[in-house]
Amino acid sequence: MTAPARRRVLQGLAAASLAPAALLPAGARPADPVPIARRLAANPLLAPFLGVDDRSGERFTAELQTIGRWPDELRGRFYRNGPALFERGGQRYHHWFDGDGMVQQFTLAGGRISHRGRLVQTAKLKAEREAGRFLYSALGTAIEGGPPITGPDSLNVANTNALEHGGRLLAMWEGGSAYALDPSGLDTRGPVAWRADLAGLPFSAHPKVDGEGQLWNIGTLGKHLMVWQVGADGQLRRFQLGESPYPGGMVHDMAVTGRYVVVPLPPVKLDFSQPPGDGPRRFALEPGQPLRVLVMDKADIQRRRVFELPAQMVFHIANAHEEADGTVVLSYIGAPDAWFLDRGAVALMAGEMASAGAVQMQVARLDMTNGRSRVEALPGEVEFPRIDPRRIGLDRGDAARWVLCGAAWNKTPGREGALLHGVQLLHLPSGRVQRYDYGPQAIAEEHVLVPKPGRSGELDAWVLGTHFDAARQATVLNLLDAADISAGPVAQAVLPYVLPLGFHGNFSAA
Ligand SMILES: [Fe+2]
Image (cartoon, rainbow, N blue to C red; front, side, top):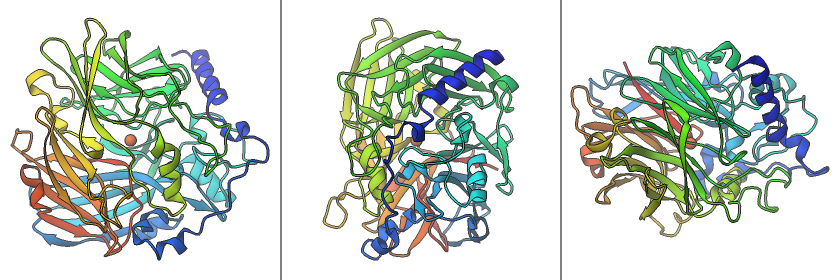
């Protein structure tokens, strides 16, 4: 991309969607901070939403108390990332997604487990710490009187995913640069410029790393849609720039097959003309608009097909693969509306428990020859889908058939309307499910599949993930066996504190 083209792209985005403060109606101030600490007494499940402060780096370091037998051969680092700093200068964010990112690192070594958590030292965080107050408006919170926004990274909270790749630990957010951290101490090195002329362009938070270690990712910026390809050595292989068939829409996740990059484009645009909170909706499906699914040729993203599926909200993809007849099969989590983005994530910040919404696994069959599609919903309230990482990008008989998800199925009093409380493995072809319930006092977070060394079967894997245990008032790291997750954890490690709930993470073998 030439320097003038890059400048135009950045200016376009800043004008289109990165100036929420400027677009808020005059006098539309967020409500006073909600005393979430008071609500905690009534509902101990809310503790992870209290958040951390700038001194978190000193507090969140510990050798963990372990239960059961952690396998000696399970060695490496398990990372998670999520919004964590919600309050500054007496002001509290109104939307869960607004918080500054904190990376969690669990180091597993011969049965010993240690934890370290650090706030990502973004330019935004450092400026606001110095000022003693929030300076920039966020997805759900209007902040007035801040400095001008100079590009996507002015607002970058690096709070969505953490992945070790090519010698870097990447902390990623949807709309800006990936931040590089030092894997050994979690010190922030700074935003990654994959190439000098591409500095500051969005590198989204859901990259996929294929079996050869090659990383694929997207970025969206107004009408622009970018595809990044980074080699296993951390060097940029290729950058492609195209146009979105739904400019300005929210784009969160992507998938790769052997041949294609697949991107769902839910019909949601961010309406910054309305204040957040209990007022009118800010996020809704645009009436009359379908869920678009963009299937692009990896070799040339201009060669593409846009499928139009029934309108749905989509955050996360489980997988995409190509069948022998050329059909692309896409599994994703769909919801009939944008309720969680619009209300659920706001309620959680206000000290009210919320469910994940009406989220279900969907399987779409996309016919590449005629553009037709068929979608089937599978029962169950699920989110945070993950597959065997060895099968990312594989097609036909090699494609993943099992999807690991967080799940909620207990609707008894006291538990209804709350976030996920268990994990489940879903066999896509048959709909068969095996699951484990952490119980009514738990909030289950995303779990990942970690292949067992020297084994190749899809369920020859551990299931690794955290949950918040409200009875203990502690975060717990769990290890289950994918071959029998219904048996529950084979080992656990209990943290001496509560971590903010995270979004996504990855395991990196030692
Ligand atoms: Fe996500």
